[in-house]
Amino acid sequence: METKGFGQLVARAEKDSTVYCPICHKMLEVKAGQIIPRCCGKVMEEMK
Ligand SMILES: [Zn+2]
Image (cartoon, rainbow, N blue to C red):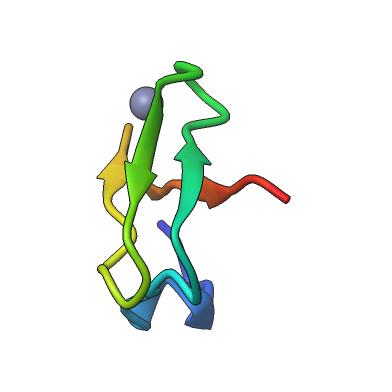
């Protein structure tokens, strides 16, 4: 059961960037404004 309010929002990339999944370590490139994809049931994290 997840009650993170954060999970309700659709995250979008602020700029062209690379996102990764902290669970399986898959990496993907996203374009500015693109919805950040989910992986392993979680929104992927933007790399700084
Ligand atoms: Zn994953």
